[in-house]
Length: 462
Image 1 (tube, one colour):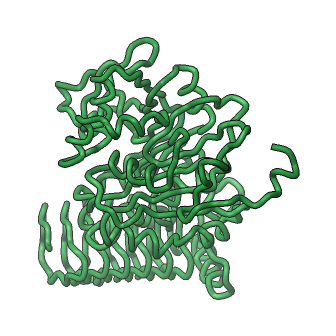
Image 2 (tube, helix red, strand yellow):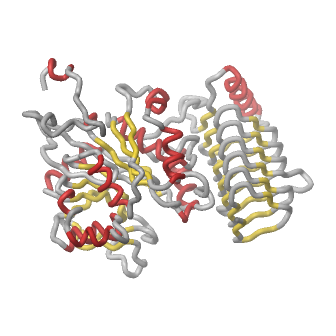
Image 3 (cartoon, one colour):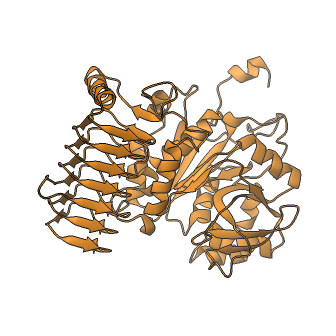
């Protein structure tokens, strides 16, 4: 494309797509990515990340993350003081990807994502991304699974180029250009991002040959049935010929009940002889599908294990792993107060800790490997260890919170004589009040509940 052509405005149809007679006329074929699919053709020398479309299927209520997802999309759960999916968007935007499609299913997923991200202008401004990011959404059409969501968006936005797909609850390091080149060089119909895991429970597992070609694929097998420890990361590159597959009789039959990548589409591609390859990720990958994995991801990110997110703003010194955020006059005053208390030793910070804006932390408090979101107030002699405290939480004196998650706008009442303990991956959802003296162990509390003084072990309050 010469300079004069680059300046011409693009003519688009009502779906934001260029008509076929104008698309790629005598120009190099470009790569488009949709979270969910990708294929590779003519990548070397043609790689143009700003033309990539990323489609991210986000459906269901994420049962394993309940009660955090009772009223909010799993993609928008707060992690390191931002919506979870924002980490993946930022990673790809840093690689100059500018076009994203959220394959949302259901009211909660649509409302959570659309109300926060809208068209992408605010996200772009927050991270100074230029040219800006564009975000679109799946039309109000019910899909029957993640692969069907990709199908709907490919057809609706008339995407005829290779596609890239990813899942809304995954966080990853990936060099997009490298995986596209791998896909092309192998002549793959689909390339799946794989990662070795210690425990295969809950993952799709691939069996590959020495050329990295996938021979068999099992969705969430038992440890005894798993042919390897190579887990499906939910990152897919798929050939544009996938449009033909979606029209095949057996796929149309599957779609009537379910069309999921792991359970349905991948096994079908293998069964019909399409070449499917596994790309072993070299960076970090987190599946934030359970509270345990959420906390694992939080700690890993705070400790710098995710290459694409190394700084959160407000680092208190050059090599410190303590961040205290603050931008306005008022939040900067709070930030300085917390830093003063750390230096004086009146509060204790260990490991890697992120503290958001406008927080108040009282004397005698100890925080270890945790994230404290904006507008949180913590009383005297509190311990927060390996935990996530979301925004506008109030924690009373002498409370002890270990390896647990406290949702937004919740109140943990506690006192020196009646201390509250929340332990061992307990999950407190949004707008919950816990009475002083409670001891909650491996317990889940749904939104808007008031819990009177009691001891709960492995209980769920709905």
